[in-house]
Amino acid sequence: MASANSEIPAFDSGELKELKQKLVAGCHILDREGITDSFGHVSIRVPGTEAFLTIAGVSPGCATLDRLIMLDLEGHYLGGDKSSPYEWPIHALIMRARPEVMSVAHTHSRWSALFSVIRGGLRPIHMYAKFLPAGGPPIYPAAGLIGTFERGEALAATLKDANAVLLRAHGDAVVGTSLEQTIQRTIQLAFLGQLAHMAVAHGEPLYMSQDELAIFSSDPAFPARPWEYYLSRIRERHSA
Amino acid sequence: MASGKKDVPKIDSSELKELTDKLMTACHILDHEGVTDGYGHISVRVPGADAFVTIANVSPGCVTRDRLIMQDLDGNYLDGAKTPPNEWPIHSCILRARPEIVSVAHTHSKWSTIFSVLPIKLKPMHHYGKFLSADGPPVYQGVGLVRTVERGNDLAAALGNQPAVLMRAHGDAVVGESVEQVIERTTRLAMLGEWNHLAMLHGEPKYLTAEELEAYNADQRFPMRGWEYYVSRLEEKR
Image (cartoon, rainbow over all chains, first blue to last red; front, side, top):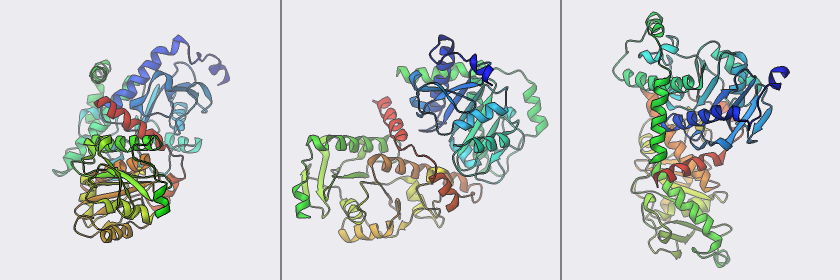
């Protein structure tokens, strides 16, 4: 850990500039797409290190380059704005448990909040769910914000090797091997929740089986295309 | 009371500028967030006085500095525009009954209205409801606008020591120790109403228990973050 951290670039180094810009864009996208409100945060791992960047106690929609913070996976301050998000353990403990995860998003998405408190879970009825199990994401059942190491570990244990976890009466945490993938999955999770909700008004929908999801998963992915699209939508807002 | 009045600053005084600016911003936020429509009002207590400032019979989304009014807790006109809101007793009677309260919002929020007439209660199913009791806000059953001190006192009695009260077939009244807190609570109450409504399609949700709400209340709070966010959304619109 110590040796890995010694290679972490300085917070203000040019090396991190692109990561920071991507992080801010990811936050603005979640706000623009109606997923986050005044709360929520996104993180991005500093490649090859045990450190990550996230937003420093600010609403995702209000994030700027000077309101970012760098922490290590134990929550130690490494640079930037001094106000860690209260729930930094969501990011630190998931990244610690899942070395392949490069980015984590935590939101209070209404659809995740809804499916976290009803029976049956958020079961897939659309191919966008190909990153989810057929039973839907696992649900972290405990009350209380993820403000401690122990709660972060319990959340990571509930997530296990899935790509998303619902937090009961709270929201969700979504992971990906890139920030773009995490943002796309977070938005798709909300879309899936809305669809599943609407469908239930008509009776029990035809949920997708694990085998059917696997067919979609085996098709090639287009990770860059929605990112470009979402970016175009925040530019629209910024230039309006 | 008379001695309290002597100390009341003028509505246009620099002393009240920050508070009245905040009040107008708060009205615009509730409008922008879709909580108020042509009706509704917010009040703020004049610090250290038995008086409050509210909006003078204008829609929250249309409020401007020259359409603010100051009244005392008996409803007497003190300063500003001369047209008190019809339901000024909502503010005066609650501010009188609850000395710790600094601000009161009254809205016709669709979500409060729905849950004011249903047999089920608007109970916390998300930690945004941590300011409420596990049983949800009480419901004021009286019919008719709250235009008299008697009705205002009835409403304040229904509110009791709670942070919010639903008003049957009418809307809600939400209180807080700052304007920011009232805005946060009023928007949250609407979100909770919407989410409770969504949940009902799926059967009874797993509500948060009083103990679980306590666990959330023991966590750190960020009262200002919501305010900054809502203000940023207003600026975007401008």
